[in-house]
Length: 202
Image (cartoon, rainbow, N blue to C red; front, side):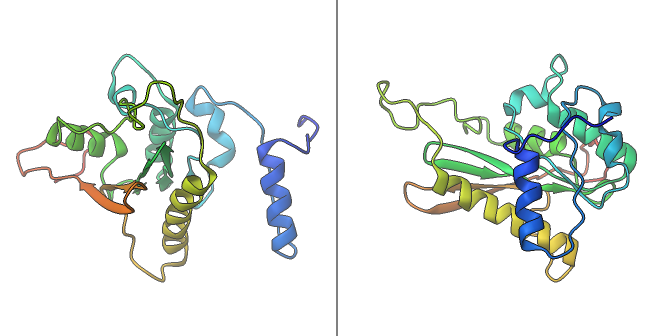
């Protein structure tokens, strides 16, 4: 039997938001923490999976000794052949928008991160540095930053579902620098001799 609904849980807030905006919308919610692929069985027949939780450290995602939520969801996505949108993250003045991964069509997030980190060894993609350069200041969530990052990803998901426009976030990550409002992209650049971890040819 499903657990009773709690009005302030994120799933219920989103359910109420959709019901209030879309007439006769049918919304099912499941409040469950997942630790294994089998925990995701509720989503075997969806059109797209959206990972909207806090992003893990990129090096943790690539580690053979650490299992992250991204790893679990990506394995499920490939096993069930369901596209997966990773959304993004932000800290301080810097945000990143991760790609939509389509099994058999695009490279996996694992492959993209592996290539980008190796290609840009001196780049700091995990926000390890104190972006404020001030040890007395603790970086916190800035709602406006969240809105920009989520808007980019939301539009990319709409493009995928509607087919109106081609996807922009294919095999690449977008970085947004709010200090000067600049955008940069890091795109996978595998050569023909590379053996891709997701089995897709370069």
